[in-house]
Structure formats: structure tokens, C-alpha cells
Length: 116
Image (tube, rainbow, N blue to C red; front, side, top):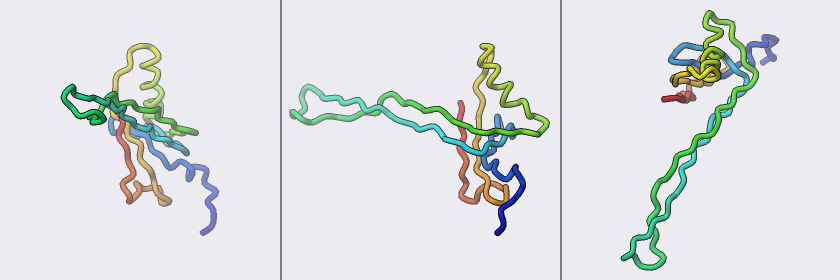
């Protein structure tokens, strides 16, 4: 199969805000999630017997590289980010969807929703 000369073929990640496509990106690094472990020992427990409880949940950063948008809502992502800079931002459901080589949603169902 010959390589495509279409520069838009590299944009395989679609970002939607509240279900509306906002932009496409060439690279996406989804945030890692980690859960701290709290070790707890009761006074009557045998020495060396420790209970492990889930603690604080931490989320990493979503990294999007080389973005492009030519839709009518092309400023949606910028407006959403700008709202936080101005102190008026609100949480929104953000979905990152992986496209396959035909530019349709991947059959593996690779989609991640981030947000409230």
C-alpha cells in the first residue's frame, strides 16, 4: 500500500468536548492513574499482619501534540482552556478517540472519557 500524501492522515486522535468534536491530534499520551496504599495494623493483630487500604487517587496529565481543527467549533478547545486561565472555566467531559487507517473509530473501541 502506497504512502498517502494527505497531511491530515497523521491526525489519528479526535478530541471531543461534551460530545462535540473539537480538534484532531497526531499524538496523545493518556494520563496514568495511581492509587496510594495505606498500610494499617490493628492493635490486636499478630505482628507482621498489615491491612492494605486504598488511599489517595492521583491522575497524570493528558498530553496532546500537534493539533488541528477546521470545523465550525474550531475554537471550542481553546475557549474551554481559556476559561480556566480567566478563572471562569467549568469541568466538561472530554473524549479522546483513536481512529483507524480508514479514519473511522477504531474497531478495538479505543476511546477514553476524561472529566467529571
